[in-house]
Image (cartoon, rainbow, N blue to C red):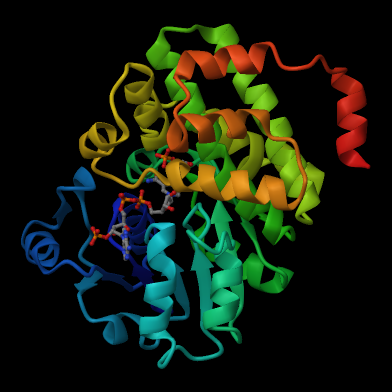
Length: 338
Ligand SMILES: NC(=O)C1=CN([C@@H]2O[C@H](COP(=O)(O)OP(=O)(O)OC[C@H]3O[C@@H](n4cnc5c(N)ncnc54)[C@H](OP(=O)(O)O)[C@@H]3O)[C@@H](O)[C@H]2O)C=CC1
Ligand SMILES: O=C(CO)COP(=O)(O)O
């Protein structure tokens, strides 16, 4: 079986390395942190990011990027979105054109607001790019709990190759040709999950969360369509599917961060407590700017942006959302789709 390399030994990179290694692939798992390497080679456990799960022996851990990438058929980009460009710059000199790049990060690049596919195209333009996204918490995937995701690529043969590679009886992979939609769904749902957490932190109930999720997927789809995505992708796994899991799961770092903000903690206190990447914070800024650029109405994102980057109190934002100008639900859908 061909070698696969996973760059990034956070929770998701580790869970995917475990999944692939259990299928029998030789997996090379790269981490930049030498202490983490020492600890993981000794204990075969990722104590910081995925405690309690043993890493199979056919995962070779390494801190050497060249060694990790060499001869791998698939290169999985498993670091937080803000680490992707630096990682690509470090590997671009020895990546070969026939290596497939599978991105699993859900976010935009800070400053440029580029999607990860656009960052990859700038740095390593010749390779096939695949995005793998969907409702898939690492904690559950690593314990073989039934999970479904989507993979999107401009070349469906490559999408199907990646589908075959990752599929197992507990991990079902669907293909989708809509790279933009699959990327946007996975990234933008983190804003709404953060908002859902705020509502939980404020002590609001199920009605509020259902409202946020329903109105959230509307504005995700609205921006997505303006950016060239297909509307149907947002009713799929990487759209509403991922939105449901992150808005409701205690595994979600975005939701947990929102809960702490809703309870009155500062952003610094919140990030200190979560200790893992909370993509929704920077994604809110990117989506706010993209909504202005594409002239798209995103009321929830707008209010969360004012909470995070302005001086809105969370309760003030709830009032703003509830009392904004009246709309007709179905006329709005028709307008978005035109
Ligand atoms: N956890 C999950 O269930 C899922 C996560 N994802 C997505 O996968 C991506 C990674 O998340 P996850 O593994 O959960 O995050 P974790 O917080 O568990 O781990 C973050 C990983 O990214 C690395 N990293 C962070 N910042 C940088 C940087 N600037 N440069 C290089 N490496 C960096 C970390 O390395 P170090 O430890 O050395 O700092 C670590 O390996 C995110 O985009 C997330 O949205 C997608 C689906 C499921
Ligand atoms: O995207 C995810 C699950 O599909 C992970 O979400 P969090 O980053 O909020 O934990």
